[in-house]
Image: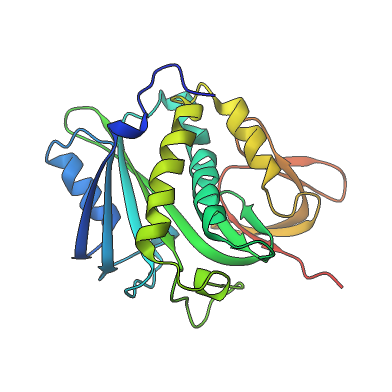
Length: 256
């Protein structure tokens, strides 16, 4: 199923590999400010100032994949909300391509963490900035644990070497480059949101389970009732009330 615009066809993308960079996301933003036309991938062998969501530091040792994709005005504002779901599907597809048969389940934790056997192997950070031209630069930052993973984290972590030895960052990126183009064509500037949402639900982790969602000012506990058509998490309370959540950190409750 291809998008109607053809804007995200595979041959429309470019790739610039770098050795060391502060942050691939920051590099893409700088390129946008300097007039880059977008559809540009920037990868780095190492980041010296990598970051995750909410300003957290992101471990960036050589051997992992650090990649960012610059998009300009990827969709009309009301339709861009499903982009994180599309990105998660693409990254899931890339990692699935390199995992051997018999590997633990590969799933997406809302909105776009990629888990292998319920342990995080990839983080995705999407940032945006309005340029002086009025265009909106959107940068999709993707960090995949391949050879290394954090020594400590508030959740389980893993890396691809644990499940698919000998995999290189270049090999994973080749799959990601292809998968992202294919999924963005389906997403079609937000017009394909219904199909993206359907696919995301098919690879989601923990629908129906009890979770805690940490928000900036409080924590909420309930049952993960899936996502609505806008991609919001649906949290069901003990009283059966559904609360839509646009952003938050999800933690699954331990099961016996």
